[in-house]
Amino acid sequence: MTLPDIQKHSDSHYLISGELLMHTVPELARQAGQVLADASGQVIIDMSGVSRADSAGMALLMELQRLARRAQFEIRFQHLPDQLLQIVRLSELEEILPISA
Image (cartoon, rainbow, N blue to C red; front, side, top):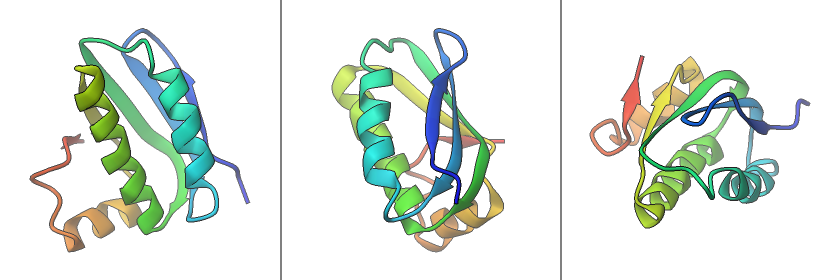
C-alpha cells in the first residue's frame, strides 16, 4: 500500500499521490488542510499520482472543495485516475466538482 501525500509544486499547483482509501483519506484530508491553508486565487490539484481510489477519494475531493469555498479560493482537479472518475460519474457529481482533463 502506498500512503497518500500532497505536495506543493508551486503557489497554485499541488500533487496528490498514493492510494485514496477509507483508512488513508482522513489523514490526507488533515494534511491537505494544512498545506492549503495559505492558498489563494485558483488552485490546481493534480491527481496523476493517485494509484488507487475508492469512494473515500471522492469524499476527499468534496472536502477539498468545501475547504476552498471557506478559504475563498478556486479549486480545480486534474488528471483523476479512471477509477475515481467513474465514482464521480456514477454519483452524478460531474457538475458539482470542478474537474478538467
